[in-house]
Image 1: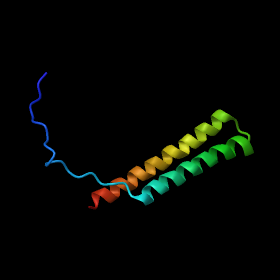
Image 2: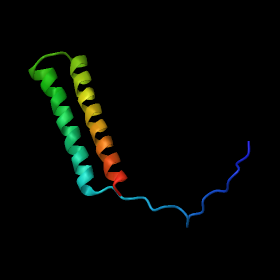
Image 3: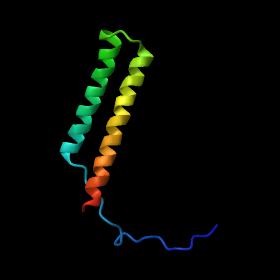
Length: 78
């Protein structure tokens, strides 16, 4: 197997944007809220462990979808 193109040298690479502190804090807050949602469903509502995990995971995936769509819209405007 051969490679038809040359490797990119270190000078030609685009700089990687650093993740801001606000973004890290927002993700940490979202993780804490999702864990709280799981505990609320499991311990307070007593709906079962698997149901609570599924509900928290579904909420997490919906949140990730929203973040992805907002990020795509913001990036397309640049």
